[in-house]
Length: 365
Image (cartoon, rainbow, N blue to C red; front, side, top):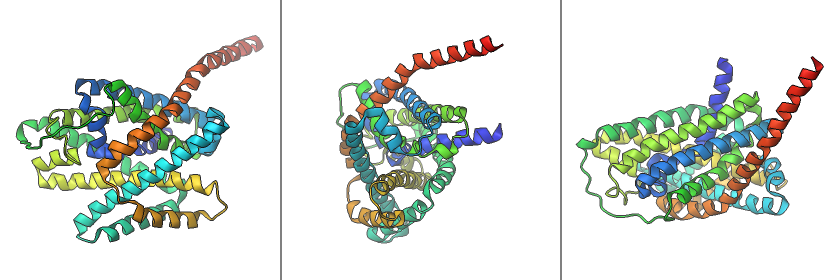
């Protein structure tokens, strides 16, 4: 029982790790996709949590039942050959974009805290990522199972601290933020769509850790529910100060710093870990995509990609979230809809199969 729970937690952790990135931990994603809709943002988070749970359940259940080993085995039977290649290109571009930006963000934090050049800091982060990539999915899984609980309790803890300490804070930030849509429902769908691009790729590599169908199902559902709870806490904390906090590059960091510089330092570590995990999951997915297409050693691909990411990582953090994420959200929405439609259309056949199975067993008796 304990080993099964550990497996469920590991699967849920890596699923959550693909979504709890720097944008989530900093509050920038939550603010732009949910808080800007005020009360409607809370409904949007609940909708996103439900969709994340369904997607996690459907994808992991299919990976286990059909013994899927990689993304192609999941994608092409789902959407067909032509659309499969379109989605393949979309996924590849999205993951390298996220990888470069997260390396840049993590490098910026390391540069600031260690007082070294930004180029050297980015190089250090890229080398660490390359070393982890050499360990394949096992290394990503081990790091995610350790870091994700820290992110969960850290983000939730600081979020609750901000909520209960609101009366102590004084903010002098003014500004506004533009919305992607005029509807919190559509904004929630965009958020789920672009996050699902990377998470589905990673989930398709988790077959060795899916010891049973129960592990697959509960891992996906638990991951989605925990994401929902964390997002609600962060959104409520930002909501208390919105729109005065709207122009902050790192909203949660700005709020924590206003309470205590020491706490701000601790949250810097949380944010750095979030960026690192985001870089690992996106970068690993990208390496997997390329290595399956070219006849070159995966180690060489890892070194080349990490080297190229250094000059390509000169993009603003909030600019990525406000521009690139929504674009990929629109594109990834099709894949999410196909997955949901297929899952619901498969329900009647599953019920028939179970009923037939019971009838056969009864007849044999």
